[in-house]
Length: 169
Image (cartoon, rainbow, N blue to C red; front, side, top):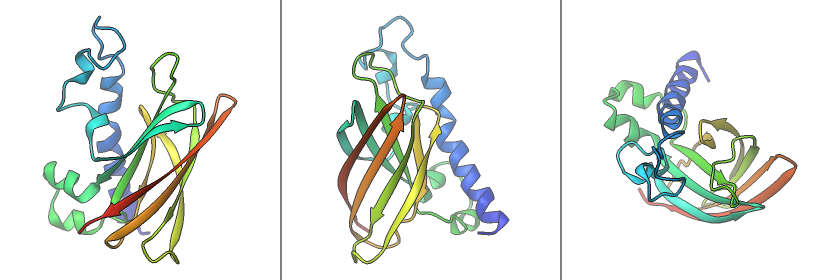
């Protein structure tokens, strides 16, 4: 990947991670539940993309979302020339929550294995901490059914989850 691809990936990461610190203290006295101020849409990063999984990931409650990076960047006013240079098509966001406290778990590392529609192609990416989630840019090059296996480890705990996703183009 050339320096322009690296720069484009960094820009996407910044755009996707920037709202997370702002969400960190959005309860404003309403408690830590989603009925508080953080439930309002618009600036809530948890609502970006398509929810592709919700359930247990080891000891944590997990949610996975896939963000179509080109669509997200177009909404941000990025030029078509810059969009053409994006090295990956989607951003995978995995939010892990401590079921006892309801707070996001941020001291974790993870990976995701992705099997493509032709079953022969697969890839593995490292999920890195990005604000309130762990994530990575992933390439889903063609329409069809994909299988994801997400693994996470942190704080002496491990967990994994599998889920399907169908990309329609």
